[in-house]
Length: 329
Image (tube, rainbow, N blue to C red; front, side, top):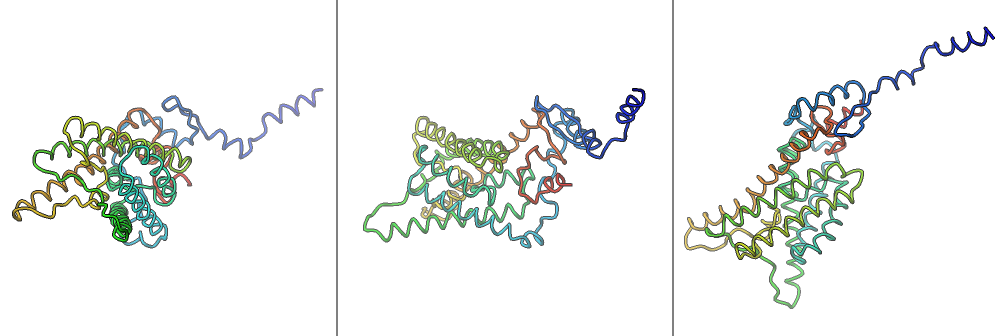
């Protein structure tokens, strides 16, 4: 009996295996009533997050090696640009044929976003891309390329639909945006700003589902767009008696030919063009930045886990982003 007891004692005090050591290395940290199992290095970062929620707010969250000289070396960027081009083209074709009817918008846009999100992240809107750049989730060079692809995709959508129209015997005209004048500028501008903030905020909140649940991502983004459209319709028609006065997408707005083509003189033409660009391009992009900043601020103040200098618990960037690389180490 004495021997058996001594054996048990020796067994309990035996050196711990590597698996046991690794199990003890991890700690459990409570963040916003959610249990997150992390290693000590990340646990320290999470534990210090509530004390300094704005730390790393403007930290870079994309691949540090991505620049003008390196971005084209990876074939992924070409696939992403094609995804943005084709996705924006389909979106513009849908708007040119079905308009901004909420029911059509939901089903059509969900399909487009699900198809493209795994390829490029499904920005499909310059205001979203600018918001990603402002929060440093996307490099400037990638963002500029995305915007160029979106504008080109919108114009290709216009060309395709216009080709069908010109090849038919009907005289149907393509929809046009209401020309922005001095008395309607601020009404249109404020509606565009509000809608852009809603879309950008919903997109920022949906990014965490982009990989794990593309359907959830698409439904959240599309619901945000639909909400912005419904509010835009109600406010424009009820308060300002305006129709066809918003689009919430600078690339599609340019495709809708918002720039004036006639005026009494060059000065008036330049003034009208400036108001149109401000209302349909500049202010929506500002709204996109504000929507992303609002989402970022709310997320940090709520105490959500931020790893590796500002990245969220689910990395919203591409697979080669800095936080994904750090997480694999």
